[in-house]
Length: 416
Image (cartoon, rainbow, N blue to C red):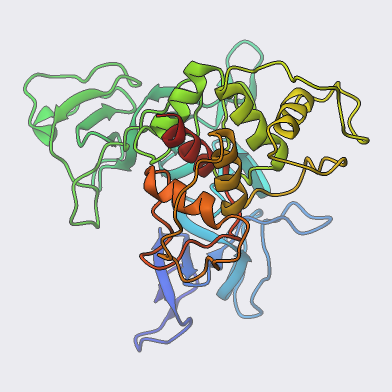
């Protein structure tokens, strides 16, 4: 490394850091990110010292300043953690992105300074920067342009500009390696777009275009298709389309085994979901819920007897279903356990009793269904009617807790 200003020259390579992930720099500074996400800076560092206008985090005893406002450090110095990307676009300006998708701007910024790292925004996947202009690619694909501090001719002051959207559907953004006036964007569909940032009259041969002069500095033009992101062997892939769901629910995909049963249940008024847009298929089904589902599937009949339960006022959403279930012999206790989790054995018993408790010979198919179990006939009936095939060729898992998606599937099979 050579420091021409101070006449210091080192010919023999020297090791400074281990586990380096990436490196960038210019004539003033070098930035390194190690594999653990630590950001290190060498040389002129734009950080303020308390009580001073100087931008330094430590000054070497054998190196002097290059001016009133800038000092040097003589080794790599850690300045930030959890960093995945860094740029040193101009002189003493540093821009970096964290693993939390936060962007920080630091140091020289047009005619002003950020004396400490200053967060610009959240939700950014990648950035590119040259001179004073910063392009930020958001995680949602929006590409924003940020001009930093801009001179106001009317007031004679420097004002921080607001980032503004210039393109959408972007997967990556890059400045041209040898011409900082040109920026490229690769969209998620693999198309390449270009913009001449400062509106200078440069050769279109650079981009394979004829003519003189580019469009206005914020206008991106389509250049070609089938472009791959740098440093990968794969073409840019468009976002995976969101799989269709069973309306009105966003959590019931049409490919789910319980999709048709849930659709049937909605059409029949058996369920309205856990909210206007969710069914919660993986949530545990309670005793109150399954009996309500069965009652509604039966047409919501009016119970033939008075409320026998000492712990129900009759105003509960499941009250009529519980009383009806009592009249059908599904439950017998005078204390209704609404929140009890529904098991596979309970489900088959409820469905079997609602069907009239038909006589069926126990098959002995399942090794975990004892011949003495109260639900043995119900399980045999359910197998004969295609309601269940068990959890394996020899097991039924009677004590396993049922989800709402499973219960709706059993009920759909029983009713159809």
